Length: 164
Length: 416
Image 1 (cartoon, chains in turn red, yellow):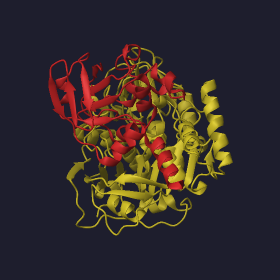
Image 2 (cartoon, rainbow over the protein chains, first blue to last red):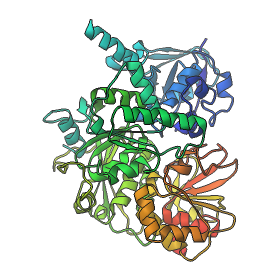
Image 3 (cartoon, each protein chain N blue to C red):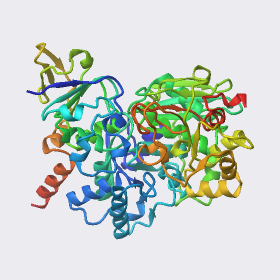
Image 4 (cartoon, helix red, strand yellow):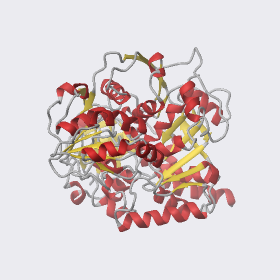
């Protein structure tokens, strides 16, 4: 069962993956240090499928695409936040990591709560408190990219189709 | 239409666009550097792109980890260097040219009306020349290198009117910090901010670049100064090709208007750990510092070094402080060398380093230990930005950094 990891406002890209690790290209190396400045224990405790719940302006700062890449590689299956910074939002979608906007979501969860994200139904459920909260719907073309697993897999597939 | 709308309309072959429209824009200049560049190369391989769409529109700059400080960095350099050579990219600047956001304007790529993308959030810097410039990730850049186009949501525009002339030793950095403090770190998310008004005519190109550079620290997608005589003068002998200035229409739609009078502006400082945690220097005066950093794409230009040198000249840096002075580019370095500016810093006890992102990168030089404090002319004071998550960064102008380095504690530059 997916668990929630709750963070506050303005979780910046240096907290997600610090500059000194950007020399690494192997996503597994990055995942070892993900969220280190925000919670040093996060990388060792996060499990596949877990969900990040956060406040405003998640991912502010750098255009480093290793930020969503590190989160996804560490096992994070979705991020539900009150708002996202622009470049991070786009990078996450391009890497096939669902990013969902939900007003007031930060106060609806605490770390460790059981969580289920229903992307198509536009809802996030807190199974520990039996709460259900609406997320802003994603446009179809973004859902298509997410379903393909990111922009590159999507482009590869559409190029493949075009040449057939 | 606003400036952003006009540029995106032109780039997408439409007569008009308005905020909220999704358009496919032709890219005029695409920049990548040694941090995201290797990821772009990997992505191009994955996608099967053998040749980039137009090598003449691509600029590759090594600036973050130069010279290489680890085997991994050296290997990344080789990967990107081989790519640039194989793709015959004429504007490949290996590790001696400087920070991308100093180099592109110097080499005449930042031109009024252009649509520019870079794999760096501070790509907004080029907006100082009246163009639309924004940061993107490496996967989006793979799409650009392959097809020369990218989708954009046309942003809402905001107009910030600047009045007055900055007082002595107060710089455009203080103004942009004041603005970010007022609107917040996400205050202008996804928007295009236009800096206009009589006050902007008193701010030189270096100062305008500082302001547009930090536009992203309030979430902006682009920050734009309409071009004027100062722009034309800077571009003379530099511009790559002809250009046509773009101005907003009289009836352009802005979702927000703000005005700032800088006549009585005080030096500003952003306290840890967010860029919008801003107050006048008087609120933090006396905080002891371990490091003072003068450099970065925000404040490593010649004009910045000159203002700081006026304060440092003939004095000694506090024994408890290590001051790093890192010119933003080779051009800046040479000019500062010729005019004796670098000597002023070296004689005062500062370390003068070769052009690079240096301490702002947090993985190369000038790394902080737990508990250490740095006053920095750079752009971000996030937790762990400059090394230990327990280090502290105070962001300030070059003059405040210089004054603080002399005294060993955060100091109002007007007192010296």
